[in-house]
Image (cartoon, rainbow, N blue to C red; front, side, top):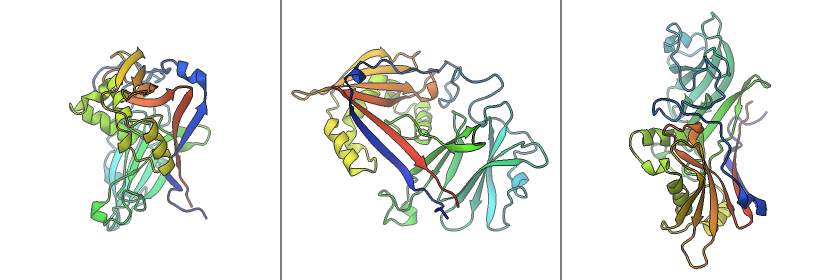
Length: 321
């Protein structure tokens, strides 16, 4: 019997490979397209099929009421209740699926997450289930994936604290797989300013409200990354030490846009020069969140420096009994 919780919340593997050709990398290839409206960075991707919307879609009238799902889950009177129902094109077809969240009464505000298809039929089909998220939350992303957040009580952020001081710090993303027939864990390509899509979409929402406008400037994002290394906590002491040694530069580091980075671009390549005597130069590859060239924030996806390639890969592992 496997444990129900994560084996690893977010393990990040740093690959340092001698690769002189990496320094000549070009602007990352993207398939983003411009759409109308600022949104939350969700109205993009050229691969979208007509009839398939991105992000949350209106639910049919008959199924949008939480109480409709109580007998389907089923919930337990006085113990659990359906908290929310949102719909989206989660399986890559024009048909809608429903993301249904169920909240437990009592300590931990435990959340269970369900996804159903054939939602207008008398017997909707459950295609995904994730349970026991402590102080959990779940939503449909602008990438048509399911995003979850919860508290890891044993993490370095929450260990030893009382429940009133807990911080949600465990984020996962699940995307439909035709071969498996359910939603499976996927990795977010970004490393800065966000390590997960859940955090990135929250950042996008803040930028849409006029906050942290620097995240709309590729050069400034690259500069912030080089200067903010001392703020990064990526769960590995060895990883953090290496990154801080390589970066943690002055905020006056000189940035130069090599390619892309314009308001109409979905990708960018930026060099950042350490102003310290004998300081090195790094090349930073960035992509717009979800390919959105209509106000999407920039995310760092790769860094190269002096024959060395630095790449972060975020892996999420889940187990169920």
